[in-house]
Image 1 (cartoon, rainbow, N blue to C red):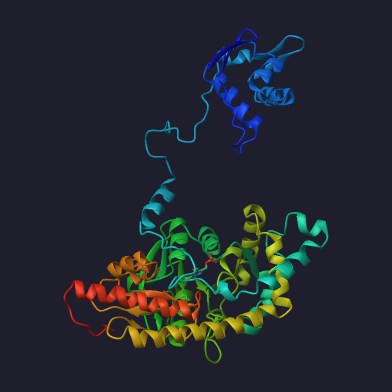
Image 2 (spheres, rainbow, N blue to C red; image 1 turned 135 degrees about the horizontal axis):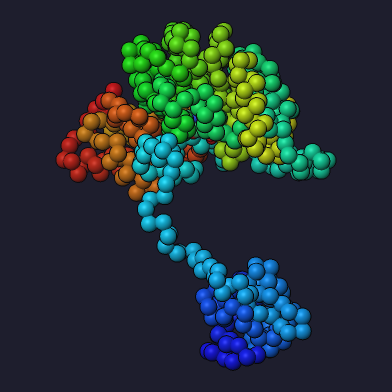
Length: 507
Ligand SMILES: Cc1ncc(COP(=O)(O)O)c(C=O)c1O
């Protein structure tokens, strides 16, 4: 509908009163678009607010508010007593209204920094598997038994504190109360002699790896990396320009001799000694000493990622590498993503004394820190002893879930899938016979809403093992049992499609 009003062309403006968008916003958008697309000429007078309000059936105040917003954007000029005019400046300078689906004016691929362009191409294009609590998603703790009420009480208590403590910028190094609580937790439970000043709080382990890589590595420097190994750490280090050297792992962990053969010069090594990600082995003492010795000789640092070391099922957990680090070469990284929950985005880096100043400078100068709220809650959770009892309780639950997986797998998957026992953590591996390629089985499981991650997803270069990584911690025994049944059906379907008999799983 086109109308003449106040000497100006008034295009039809449809106001939808049922829409969620307020009437004033609808009118603002419509007038703005008319001005920017030339519906009104530069310098042209707009209808009087009273006229426009009457014609559109909206209040005059709404129109005045919209005119004010357009004037604030420099699109209208008000002249007292004369009305509102399209800004004369638009004669020469009329930008087009931005549209959500507008094609990019840049016709070539967006220009990335050389380092990130190279990094992106190396992240791999493997699809991210759904990270939801269902059988057998890896890396998720048990949401179903998390003490929500206790957590809510802590949160409310924190918010009743002093406004100056709650609302301001936090300490970039991390909340001191949390750093102190962690130092004492690490001393008592992980055998690490350390001070709070050595601990820096970050937004999760993956951020810690990026921080370490960007602080200590020059682009192209060699980093020994477990193969298969942790995906997040791999991507963080690649993004820092690392030249990752894939080092095979066996039941004793990273093969140090092989690493020395592949790359005697290295700047950094990345290991998961308490529970090799993803294969699940504990690094032997011999290998730990060999690694530390090699690092000392090369003048290299070692990252110890202790992501789920708290959940050791029987007896005392294996010692941390950091606890035998006499020369200050090991940078220990911890996360609350497994011991509490991943949405916290909370982790920490424990650096050797020689790195305290440089990490402190970096944190203070340009890392924005982590929300004080979550840090304070976690600090209190630890100080009050809730963390220790939560970990103890979860350890028992994860052990039960692990045992349920093993028992049902023995009954239902024998000859199809060889689920390996593990000593702790949130996941284990399961070996497939050669006739059942891991990718094929993983895709078929995905179609039945089961996550079964192929071991190859964790590999920097192909590994000679065919199998799946199965998380058991995040779902109830009932869902584990149901998941095993679905996996059995997927494997049986594959078996009958290939016309084979039940094989013995390869070791
Ligand atoms: C080996 C490893 N380390 C650390 C983490 C935790 O990373 P973040 O703290 O960034 O959640 C994960 C998560 O899955 C992991 O697999």
